[in-house]
Length: 87
Image (spheres, rainbow, N blue to C red):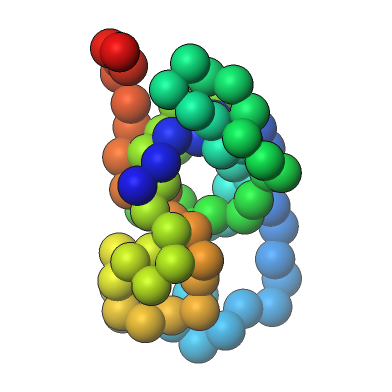
């Protein structure tokens, strides 16, 4: 799992079976000090996040498991809203 900040939305008019109705957001991965750790990525939204929100992301195979039905073709999923980071 890793932190990220929602920086925008993604519109996809054609979707793979299993992702109909799913919402996609553009997320900037962050480290514990809220510094960017790489390029922005598209993540499927499982928690109704909004632009500017600090979120918890799951990547790789685990991202697909966070979706219903499982094993849809996603590389990142937003699985939580972050209230505070205490380091």
